[in-house]
Image (cartoon, rainbow, N blue to C red; front, side, top):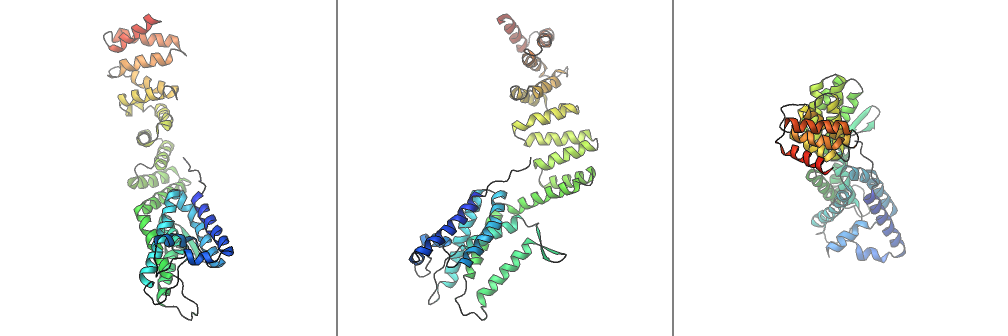
Amino acid sequence: MNERPQVPIVTLLLIVANIGVSFVLTWQPELLERFAFDPLQPSFQTALTSLFLHVNTVHLLGNMVFLAAVGPAVEQAGSSWRLALTYLAGGLSGIGAHWALEGRNADPSPVVGASGAVVACVAYYSVRYSFIKVPLAPKVNVSIVFVTAAWLVMQVASAFVNIGATLPSQAYWAHGGGFAAGLILSLFFRAPKEARLQQGRAMIARLGERSPGATLSAAEQHLAEHPTDLIALRNLADAKAQVNDVEGESEALCGLLDALPESQQPEIALRLKAIGRLDRLPSLRRALMAERMKESNPEASVALLESIVGCADDPQRPEALYSLALLLNGDDPKRSQALRDELKAEYPMHPASERARLRELES
C-alpha cells in the first residue's frame, strides 16, 4: 500500500523553462521589453510570459530553489496538473495584484519573474504539510505555517516601508497575490484534510512501534474522521489480529472490502476464511465475489462458495453447489460429481439442478 514516488515532471519542466528563457534573454535582451508585463499596457499574454522572465541570476536561482524544494511535494500530494494550475494561477494573481495596487503610479516599472507563482506553490505546500516542523533555533522547532506566515508579514510590511532603498522596490504585492491564490487553491483542493490524513497515518505508524493497543487507539481515532482510509483500516485489522480480537478484525476487514479495488479483495476474503468470519458477508455478495474471482483467484472463489455450501438453509446454496462443482471439475472431478449429486438430491426442482443434468447429458 506504500505510494510510489512519482517523477515531478511539471516541476522539472517549469525549472527548465525558466532557465531556458533566461539563456535566451542573455543573447536577445530586447525580448525582455517585449514580453514583460507593462502595467500601462496590460495584457493576458504578457502577464503569462512574464512569469518565465528574470532580470538577474540571483532572482532566477532564488525562485528555482524554492520551486525545486516545494514543487515535487505538491505534485506528490496532489497531481502534476494541480501544481501547474497553482503555479499559473499564483503567477497571474500576483501580476493582477501588482497591477491593481501599483499600476496606477506615475511611472510603474514592468513586472517580470516567477515570484508570485512560486509563492503560490509555497502557500499550498504550507497548508498541505502544516504538521511539519522545522528547526528555528537549537531545540526550538516551529510549524512550517509559522515560518511562511512570518515571511508573508515581512513581504506585506516591505510593500509599505522600503527603508534605505536606492533601487526600485520588488513587486511585493505580487508575492501577496500569489500567496492568496495558493491559499485559496489549497482550500479548494481540501489540502487541510489531506494534511490531517497524512498526519494521522504518521501517528499510527509511530504508535505502532509501541504496542498493538497504541495502534488500535490511534487507528480508531483516525478512522473517526477518515472512515474509508485503507491504510488505517489495514493497521486496525492487523492490530485487532495481534490482540486476538476476531470480531474486531473481521469488522475492519469488511470495511476494507467495501473500499478496496476488486484486484485486492481475494486477500481479504482468504483472511476472513482463516478466522472463520466469511459469514459476516451476505451470501449473495459472496456468490457474486466468487463469480468475479473464479479466473483470477480460484482459491478465494472456492473459499467463498464453500462458506455458502456449508450453510444448509442458505437460499444461495443451490447455485453455490452448482458453481463450486463447475470450479472443481478440472482439479477434483470426484468432489465435483459429489456436489452435483448433492444438488440434484436436495434440490431436484431447482434450475441449478436442471443445468447440472443438462451438462451431464452433454458430456
